[in-house]
Image (cartoon, rainbow, N blue to C red; front, side, top):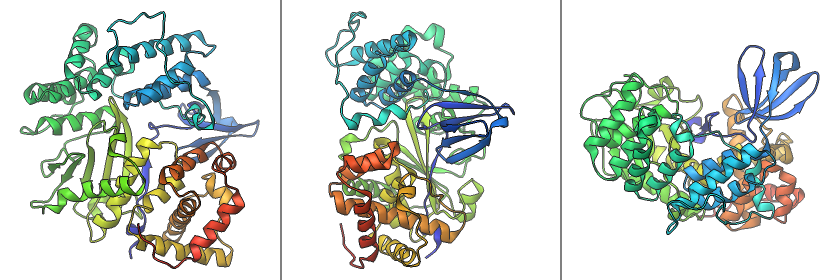
Length: 494
């Protein structure tokens, strides 16, 4: 079996999120965002979404640390844009108690904006009495504190309170409310790219495709891109989302060049270069989504779809690599922040295993990233493998069993801390995925309920010792479970 079938890495852009919003300014003029985990006279160590970077202290000009209150405010805005208003309200309430008066004032403004969108709420609530909301508490509430995300991309308008109100109105199915909000600020914000995009979204929601297309084309032309004539509003809107999320688009880009075609399903927009497709071509991703939800115990209503998941199927492996597809991979999920929430993409090339392995794996990533965005990389991969056919887990068990026998399996605590690299060759990458798969499967044996497993995995981002204690486990128990799963040859099925 080719390694491309075994590895489907999740690719996260630096814009998606880091454990804290620290910014390291280098003497070269470059900046690095991440969590500064150590800083002394010799070196600075920064944890980024792609791993840890160790920088000579002489290379660091200064370190800009974001306050906890600002982190809460940023994460609350991200949660609000994704439609998770209860979680956003709780975060804003905590930020409103921050000792920094500027942060507290912004948080109160955000609470007022949420209240105006609450069903049955007054359009102009008394700004002196912020609305009540759930009070965060317990160990389960500690996760968001360290996971602040940057503001949404796409222009100045969407970063303001009114822009987020428009996003929430669209998500609530109220394009009329969105238009009214846009009309109020059109004079000062009408030329902003995110304003024009959200105007197009409101038109599209009302099925006024001609007006939606005009708004979308204005965004694309301002970015120097002239899309071919004849593309439907939904297609143009997806191009806008990609461009406003920071993707460089040109005439030959996937989904732009003339040879690309598009198939739309309830949750997916599938871009492909093939002249003919069969019925299952559109059914496969929806089936993969249903499988991912079932395996991980997620209700469809829990998903907050900012837009369809965009799937780009390249003609073959060479075309996939030429477009930037990772080596040693059969596909990857790519996530950016767009003006109205997460832009989720899957890039891959079809082969005889794609529809049963890679599709399930990458679709699972899009679900997990939305609901558990702070899960360590190993847990993301282990949970995604768990959605694949059980045959794959059996192969990974054999790899871990062999490494346990010869003493080459990385220490479990180091692995849980996400300190084990993915690897640079086929054997190393297979070993990484094998340990991720077996570790995740061991947790399912110990904890049982799928959502409890996922919540525990997300808590690992704050420290595996505390996460295991919260779950009522010890490291020794998990180590024994890993050994038991690795030695289990029974092909259990879900």
